[in-house]
Image (cartoon, rainbow, N blue to C red; front, side, top):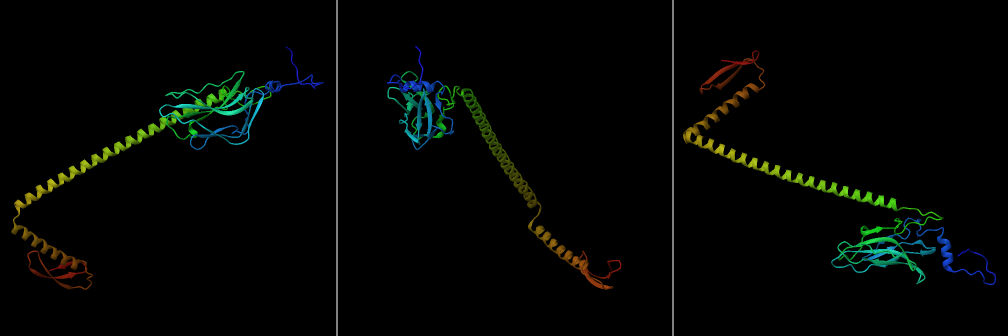
Amino acid sequence: MEKSSFFNSVSHDRVYRAEEWAEYFASFIGNGVFPVPSNNLQVVAGSGMVVTVKAGKAWINGYFYYNTGDLSLTLPVADGVLNRIDRIVVRWDLTERLISVVVKSSTPSASPTPPALQRDADAYELCLADITTGAGVTAISQAVITDRRLDTSLCGVVAGVVDQIDTAAFNAQLEAWFSDYKGQSLQEFNDLVSYMESLELLGHQQYNALQAYMNAFKLEAENDFNAWFASVKNVLDEDTAGHLVNMIQSNTARIELIEAVLFNDITANPFLILFDDLDGVVSTGVWNAALRRIEC
């Protein structure tokens, strides 16, 4: 059947339905979200189990969608044991004659998979984001929200007039790079932790070795001193020890006297001095300044 549009009506002979206009626009404007601004229909974490869809526009099968402000959506309560993936979609519903943002949840599982998108004559869905809802969580963080707007197999960007920008390869490459970078960073962090733990262990070992060495040295020194002291006690009795003390004191006094004589500023010549010799005899001497000596 041949179809053409759009012409002025004469006596209502040219009446066009909404789907015909949609079909017309869909022929040169592809499905997806509008690329400007960059946060167009972006899904961000809110408070608790609430997420927010930012303001933005989308185009589905020739029909226009416009969210004029932040739209809050509350996710279902998390399963107590298993994980779940909640998918935020823009849904074109021909039966209800509207486009709206809805939440689709997967069946809880240890390894959940996202719920399938409906794309048939009755409904067509664009995925904005996937949210990994962990078991028992009571709040959603931005880290568990995966943006799907640039994935052309799930959403894509409206480019018009004929071609659609294919960002699937770029998005896959970006995710692969990030996954690889994350793995490398985690490995480097684990290596650093292992290295620091090895340094800590080595430090403890060296400290323990030093402590053991000092304890052994202290014990050896104590043993050597005790052995020496025991040998001295066996040789010296009280009288001998006292005599040694007296000799030390006497010699000390003599040394002090000699130092006083030698280091005084003596300038006169002759200079008569008296001193005790080593046998305790008092002797008389004359200081010879020229030769710097005592002459007896």
